[in-house]
Amino acid sequence: MPSLARFSIPAPGAEPAAARHIAIVDIGSNSIRLVVYDGVARTPVAIFNEKAVCALGLGLGSSGRLNPEGRAQALVHLERFVRLARAMRVGVLRILATAAVRDAGDGAAFVAEVEARCQTSITVLSGEDEARSAAMGVLCGTPDADGIVADLGGGSLELVALDRGEFAGPYATMPLGILRLNEASGGERAQAAAEIDRHFAEVDWCGRGAGRPLYAVGGAWRALARLFIAQTGHPLHVLDNYTLDRAEALRLLDLVARQNRKSMEKIPGLSKKRLPHLPMAALLLEKVLQKVQPSQLIFSVYGMREGQFFNSLPADLQARDPLLAACTDLARTAGRFPEHGGEMMEWMAPLFPQESPHQRRLRHAACLLGDVFWNEHPDYRAEQAFLRVFRLPFMGLGHQDRAALALAIYARYETEGELPAAQAARTLLSEDDQRRARAIGLALRLGHSVSGGVPGLLRTTRLALNGGALILEAPADDPAFGPEIPAGRYERLARAVGCERFETRRR
Image (cartoon, rainbow, N blue to C red; front, side, top):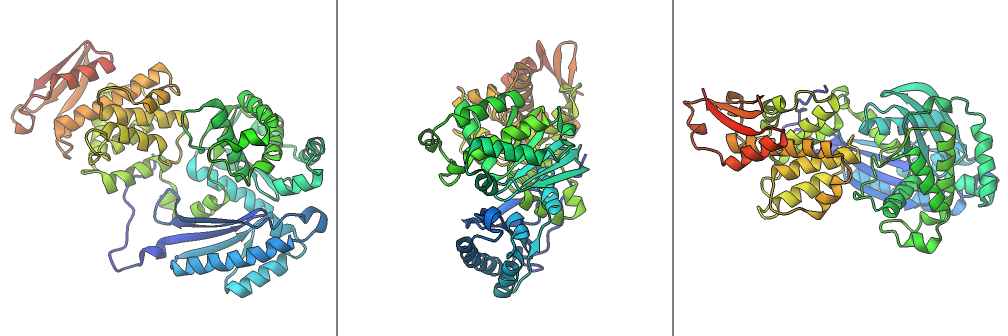
């Protein structure tokens, strides 16, 4: 398991905080974006994010040159972005250009002008670089990703194969970005489909993705995910790791093809600038699903920029589990005794003797978060804890796992009644998973009651299952365990783990 050891932080005055930040400017075919990340965390936390839609690649297919109007806008925005990054005194500034600049006849002249104006250098990514960076972004959030990453931009579509977290070798870059495909087809669906088929005929390795996940990257496909969530009434409006099986994805794509613009405009959070591109984005995704035949479609909000961020991290940070790293950082900043999470993990382990590594990882995350919400208002603590865990941008966490983790923390702060959002979260889980989440939460509640959340005390006690009984053994001569814990807390946990009774023993 990746190490959870605290990484070093410079002493006050040793290094300006901004010097640890990583700024990435992404010059895309449709938009240009500046993102500034906190570079000392395993998770790419964006402390600044600004986008400008310049459509540099508009008309590139016919003219072979960058869009003149977009070029002028891009120069203005790039000067602003570089000025902002320097004013922030970031430690790293990377300016990256992708398909439009790479393929345009005047791309080199544009790069030279930007470098002269901004007194900085630009890296023009090759198709392979772009594909690998997108795949690294997916691996940043899902280190064991296994299947094919498909990254859709304005100027190109990249495919790259992953094998259990490693690059499997083949990749493809095709001029099938939203802007180029729309131009090449005149906006006609049949012509666009023929153009897609023509390029895919040259990619002979897509079959290796059959029966494995397809990871969809790119803003146009994220807009489709938002539309799917709205159409299906999915209880969690978090795009990352939103997952559909292939048949359901194809059904929803067909539904999108029959939607009119007015109905789509009513979808909350759906950018009106994305609407004209949704039909082509849907057709492209449909074609990719048909060619690859994946088991699942998984949307990722992490792509090329996050891949660049991930590559900049030291090896020890890259090796950390993204979910457990995020939970550890939350425990350190918000918990009273953050080291107590590890003790709690060991203490309740006898209640879950046959858990899988995946289940153990989620339980570990719950233990780390078990005391993070102690300072919320008591009347709203359970609600606030649930909603924050359910909606926080954790990496490496699918929607079912997110629901299980949130429900475990909800049970940790158990209260009267039932939160409607918690009821909705339960619909994502089987009954067994719901029971397990509740058992973890009630064990957290009991463990914090027994020890007061203070490190060291739980290690002197032992929790066990024996003959249908839940047993807590504690030292007879330790005054910390003198008063009796309310019986209801034992009873609820005993029922949750399938025991008929509970016992406390002094030794």
